[in-house]
Image (cartoon, rainbow, N blue to C red; front, side, top):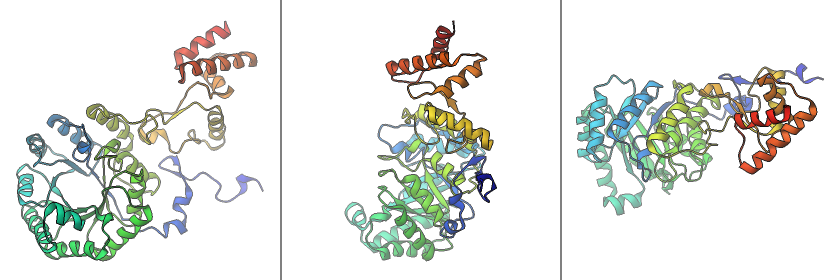
Length: 415
């Protein structure tokens, strides 16, 4: 039997991209507990700024917040009013603008933090503290009852001010006592009707199965309260953790563009959005064609530049030099009508384009395509000569060649 006669052999296309059909296999989906919708809570301007050496000025925060709002980010954490007057002024300026996104302030479990956030015009709080018992005892100097009462008192005040409140108990995953986690949230929710609760893999140490376990527990204990996940990337698991949390029932993800944040940074906004859209098939409501532009803007302002092979936004992720890959992509494209067959996602979905480049790993297919694009003809011997020269020059330069360099080689060979 020929492949084209087999049922189900056609490419599985989602968002105009050929993705893995196994992500949507009934047996796989039956293990997921996907929410109806997922909120992106971008923390670039707060947790991103916690990365050592990163500083956003008042004007930069206002500008970036407007850009995030423009592309559809639903919650934007502007900063911590208690940290600086610049953050306070940024909130006050943004409060006068007609943003669709909620403007979120970080507040510790301190009444003065809550009051200041309200005075500055914040729409809501990322109301947070470490709930690891060792943090509570040795850093805060509180016993369990004092600690829980302090959380409740600040949360009540925030609701009196009419603020949206997410309580996040960070360092959740290093606690060796599920009952303590359950107790903290139970006592809070018993006394205050807050809008959302969050858990945090603050040091990025939880295996995705572990994340599934704790998210499922939280949804079992508190089924009517939306749950957020906050995660750092210390083991390179942040995107996987975020997607597992959502697949397990979490309704919000806290992310940062370009993985900015404390130490290794937060789950990457652009990666999480792409994963939600193309791996889980969820609508985020965010304009994905703008992610690369926002990433580049934040790289320029933060002075922290991503690797050229960074997922979604890396400068060279849609470059291809390999002769085998270019040849396969061209042949697959003709057979399927999908011109990005040898790439994981359609570049156009992210406002990008494919680019074939010449270098050490190039093959005849690249030279033929390049000549065709230029409207030039060459014999097989000339094609071989051009390819040999491209390879040699690439080895000397330790890089792929730009078009001008290839044009010069072609001119020398064809003259």
